[in-house]
Picture 1: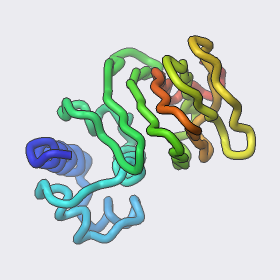
Picture 2: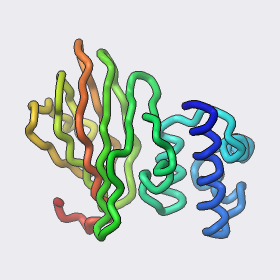
Picture 3: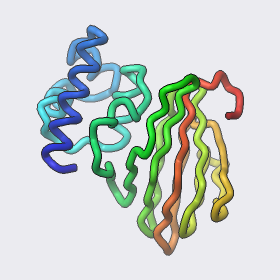
Length: 176
Protein backbone atom coordinates (compact mmCIF):
# COMPACT_ATOMS: atom_id res chain seq x y z
CA UNK A 1 0.00 0.00 0.00
CA UNK A 2 1.37 3.45 -0.87
CA UNK A 3 2.01 6.17 1.73
CA UNK A 4 -1.13 8.17 0.93
CA UNK A 5 -3.34 5.07 1.23
CA UNK A 6 -1.69 4.08 4.53
CA UNK A 7 -2.18 7.59 5.89
CA UNK A 8 -5.81 7.65 4.73
CA UNK A 9 -6.49 4.24 6.28
CA UNK A 10 -4.83 5.29 9.55
CA UNK A 11 -6.83 8.50 9.87
CA UNK A 12 -10.08 6.73 9.04
CA UNK A 13 -9.34 3.93 11.50
CA UNK A 14 -8.59 6.44 14.26
CA UNK A 15 -11.80 8.33 13.52
CA UNK A 16 -13.91 5.15 13.67
CA UNK A 17 -12.22 4.06 16.91
CA UNK A 18 -12.71 7.44 18.56
CA UNK A 19 -16.37 7.68 17.47
CA UNK A 20 -16.96 4.43 19.33
CA UNK A 21 -15.17 5.70 22.42
CA UNK A 22 -12.50 2.99 22.29
CA UNK A 23 -8.95 3.53 23.48
CA UNK A 24 -5.96 2.28 21.51
CA UNK A 25 -5.47 -0.42 24.15
CA UNK A 26 -9.09 -1.58 24.01
CA UNK A 27 -9.16 -1.95 20.23
CA UNK A 28 -5.68 -3.47 20.04
CA UNK A 29 -6.52 -6.07 22.71
CA UNK A 30 -9.85 -6.94 21.08
CA UNK A 31 -8.16 -7.32 17.67
CA UNK A 32 -5.31 -9.42 19.08
CA UNK A 33 -2.56 -6.98 18.18
CA UNK A 34 0.01 -4.89 20.01
CA UNK A 35 -1.04 -1.37 20.98
CA UNK A 36 2.17 -0.06 19.38
CA UNK A 37 1.23 -1.69 16.05
CA UNK A 38 -2.23 -0.13 16.14
CA UNK A 39 -0.71 3.24 17.01
CA UNK A 40 1.70 3.00 14.05
CA UNK A 41 -1.15 2.00 11.76
CA UNK A 42 -3.22 5.01 12.84
CA UNK A 43 -0.19 7.21 12.18
CA UNK A 44 -0.02 5.90 8.60
CA UNK A 45 2.94 3.59 9.18
CA UNK A 46 3.30 -0.16 9.04
CA UNK A 47 2.07 -2.68 6.54
CA UNK A 48 -1.23 -4.18 7.74
CA UNK A 49 -2.27 -7.58 6.45
CA UNK A 50 -5.74 -8.20 5.09
CA UNK A 51 -6.47 -10.28 8.20
CA UNK A 52 -5.44 -7.40 10.47
CA UNK A 53 -7.75 -5.02 8.63
CA UNK A 54 -10.59 -7.59 8.80
CA UNK A 55 -10.06 -8.12 12.55
CA UNK A 56 -10.14 -4.36 13.15
CA UNK A 57 -13.37 -4.04 11.14
CA UNK A 58 -14.93 -6.91 13.11
CA UNK A 59 -13.91 -5.36 16.45
CA UNK A 60 -15.24 -1.97 15.36
CA UNK A 61 -18.43 -3.77 14.29
CA UNK A 62 -18.31 -2.26 10.81
CA UNK A 63 -18.19 -3.95 7.41
CA UNK A 64 -14.68 -4.33 5.96
CA UNK A 65 -15.73 -1.89 3.22
CA UNK A 66 -16.46 0.83 5.78
CA UNK A 67 -12.88 0.66 6.99
CA UNK A 68 -11.27 0.62 3.53
CA UNK A 69 -13.76 2.81 1.60
CA UNK A 70 -11.45 5.87 1.45
CA UNK A 71 -8.69 3.80 -0.20
CA UNK A 72 -8.76 3.59 -4.00
CA UNK A 73 -5.84 1.21 -4.60
CA UNK A 74 -6.11 -2.58 -4.35
CA UNK A 75 -5.15 -4.03 -0.97
CA UNK A 76 -3.07 -7.15 -1.02
CA UNK A 77 -0.60 -9.57 0.42
CA UNK A 78 0.99 -12.89 -0.50
CA UNK A 79 -0.43 -13.06 -4.02
CA UNK A 80 -3.96 -11.85 -3.21
CA UNK A 81 -5.35 -8.43 -4.12
CA UNK A 82 -8.80 -7.03 -3.37
CA UNK A 83 -10.44 -3.76 -4.36
CA UNK A 84 -13.80 -2.46 -3.25
CA UNK A 85 -16.09 -1.94 -6.25
CA UNK A 86 -19.34 -0.98 -4.55
CA UNK A 87 -20.30 -0.39 -0.94
CA UNK A 88 -23.91 -1.15 -0.11
CA UNK A 89 -26.02 1.28 1.89
CA UNK A 90 -29.12 -0.81 2.56
CA UNK A 91 -29.96 -3.61 4.96
CA UNK A 92 -28.67 -6.23 4.81
CA UNK A 93 -25.38 -4.56 3.99
CA UNK A 94 -23.93 -5.92 0.72
CA UNK A 95 -20.47 -5.10 -0.66
CA UNK A 96 -18.85 -6.10 -3.96
CA UNK A 97 -15.11 -6.59 -4.47
CA UNK A 98 -12.80 -7.47 -7.33
CA UNK A 99 -10.26 -10.11 -6.23
CA UNK A 100 -7.14 -11.48 -7.87
CA UNK A 101 -5.18 -14.57 -6.75
CA UNK A 102 -1.73 -15.11 -8.24
CA UNK A 103 -0.78 -18.62 -9.43
CA UNK A 104 -0.02 -21.09 -6.64
CA UNK A 105 -1.65 -18.89 -4.00
CA UNK A 106 -3.49 -20.16 -0.97
CA UNK A 107 -5.16 -17.72 1.41
CA UNK A 108 -6.90 -18.65 4.63
CA UNK A 109 -9.46 -16.05 5.66
CA UNK A 110 -10.57 -15.68 9.24
CA UNK A 111 -14.24 -15.97 10.11
CA UNK A 112 -16.27 -12.83 9.42
CA UNK A 113 -19.00 -11.50 11.69
CA UNK A 114 -21.93 -13.86 12.43
CA UNK A 115 -24.47 -14.10 9.64
CA UNK A 116 -22.00 -13.10 6.89
CA UNK A 117 -22.21 -14.81 3.50
CA UNK A 118 -19.85 -14.69 0.51
CA UNK A 119 -20.83 -15.23 -3.07
CA UNK A 120 -17.95 -15.75 -5.50
CA UNK A 121 -18.12 -15.60 -9.30
CA UNK A 122 -14.99 -16.71 -11.14
CA UNK A 123 -14.11 -14.47 -14.08
CA UNK A 124 -10.90 -16.16 -15.24
CA UNK A 125 -8.49 -18.90 -14.23
CA UNK A 126 -9.09 -21.66 -11.69
CA UNK A 127 -9.95 -21.26 -8.02
CA UNK A 128 -11.04 -23.49 -5.20
CA UNK A 129 -12.84 -21.67 -2.39
CA UNK A 130 -15.17 -22.12 0.55
CA UNK A 131 -15.20 -23.11 4.20
CA UNK A 132 -12.16 -25.05 5.37
CA UNK A 133 -12.69 -28.72 4.66
CA UNK A 134 -15.59 -27.96 2.30
CA UNK A 135 -13.89 -25.84 -0.38
CA UNK A 136 -14.95 -26.52 -3.95
CA UNK A 137 -13.66 -25.64 -7.41
CA UNK A 138 -15.46 -22.68 -8.93
CA UNK A 139 -16.74 -22.73 -12.51
CA UNK A 140 -16.44 -19.69 -14.74
CA UNK A 141 -19.46 -17.42 -14.38
CA UNK A 142 -21.30 -19.69 -11.91
CA UNK A 143 -21.75 -18.06 -8.47
CA UNK A 144 -20.95 -20.09 -5.36
CA UNK A 145 -22.33 -18.91 -2.02
CA UNK A 146 -21.18 -20.02 1.43
CA UNK A 147 -21.33 -18.96 5.05
CA UNK A 148 -18.28 -16.77 5.71
CA UNK A 149 -18.69 -16.60 9.48
CA UNK A 150 -16.27 -19.51 9.69
CA UNK A 151 -12.66 -19.78 8.45
CA UNK A 152 -12.49 -20.25 4.68
CA UNK A 153 -9.90 -20.57 1.94
CA UNK A 154 -9.11 -19.42 -1.58
CA UNK A 155 -6.64 -21.51 -3.57
CA UNK A 156 -5.35 -20.92 -7.09
CA UNK A 157 -3.24 -23.47 -8.95
CA UNK A 158 -1.18 -22.90 -12.11
CA UNK A 159 -2.95 -19.80 -13.41
CA UNK A 160 -3.98 -16.46 -12.01
CA UNK A 161 -7.63 -16.33 -10.94
CA UNK A 162 -9.86 -13.25 -10.95
CA UNK A 163 -13.29 -13.11 -9.43
CA UNK A 164 -16.08 -10.98 -8.10
CA UNK A 165 -16.78 -11.38 -4.40
CA UNK A 166 -20.09 -10.25 -2.93
CA UNK A 167 -20.26 -10.12 0.85
CA UNK A 168 -23.63 -9.93 2.61
CA UNK A 169 -23.44 -9.01 6.30
CA UNK A 170 -25.80 -9.91 9.11
CA UNK A 171 -28.26 -11.99 7.15
CA UNK A 172 -29.48 -13.88 10.26
CA UNK A 173 -28.25 -17.23 8.97
CA UNK A 174 -30.45 -17.23 5.87
CA UNK A 175 -28.75 -17.78 2.54
CA UNK A 176 -28.81 -14.51 0.62
